[in-house]
Amino acid sequence: MAVFKLENVEDLYEIGEVLGSGHFGQVREVRERASGVRWAAKFLKIRRGAGSRLGMERKSVEREVELLQALQHHNVMALKDVFECRAEIVLIVELISGGELFDFIAEKENLTESEAIEFLKQILQGVSYMHSKHICHFDLKPENIMLSSNTLPNTDIKIIDFGMAHRFIQGEEYRSMGGTPQYIAPEVINYEPLSTAGDMWSMGVITFILLSGLSPFQGNTDEETLRNIVGMLYEFDDCHFSQTSAMAKDFIQKLLVKAPNERMSAEECLNHPWIKPLTRTQVAKRNRSSINMRNFKRFNAKRKWKMSYNMVSACNRLCRLQLHCKTSALQDEELSNTCTPHSALQSVIPEDEELRQCESDQEESETKTSSLLRRRLSSSS
Image (tube, rainbow, N blue to C red):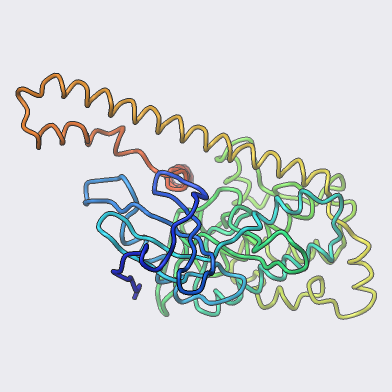
């Protein structure tokens, strides 16, 4: 059960600068008054009632908090405290200052497979730990793999964002249609029972991209991407994999398997000869192979551009919403002689469809993906 504190967060933490913001609230740097240690505080707006769609559902926050409180591993973002007040919930989490792993790698001129493996090994260790707790992330992708700092070698991989994670109960049959199209497994699209093998498919896609700078199933549209995943339409073309070792390809092939029970587990990945070479020859082959930096930089630039585009679109949508609210307020002010203060307040805070649909980018993405998956299911039935 998720544990919340009812104390005032400002009594225990000094609130600092804003690190980021979105529809659901802000992330700010904070300093613990007792120790002086810096953390990040996520101020999350909570929906006021069942009919409202502004803010996060309390149940979803409770679920994520419960999972994070159960996970204590150096490759998983740490949750220190959770505070609850009237309108929001505040999560005190580890301050992760190194940025995204893919951004860090894109700054390099070259990278050998051995260097890439050191990062993958840390991700796998975090995933293996989660799976040992029967918790599956279900949204592993470059945006959710961060670095504790940007100083090597003293940096750790940090897996973040457990909003779609699920803890399995023995005998339970769990299905979900959420996720990011490029990284979701075939069983998600087919609405079949899910397992921790879903994360291992995502690990195969991430490794494929890391080595080649190419997304294995990416189509011109999300619908085409989903069809490619279900049809297992991918290949190791020479243009992108000319410098990739045979062991690396074998590693990917044992993850991008349609049958979930035939994929390698995280523990099996950590013992694969590409990750844990058994002979000097295997080590030498790994050291001679490198990732395709030119294509990787191109992929990462395109990925960042898409993220920026989505952010600008969200900001424009929010500006239109604010303008709509101001216009409504002015109209209601003109009619103030016939309105009580209570009714005026109701009109300034409308419950029309445009306002109700003001969601975060993540929720909008999940809704879009679910819609695509439903269409996929309808067309195949």
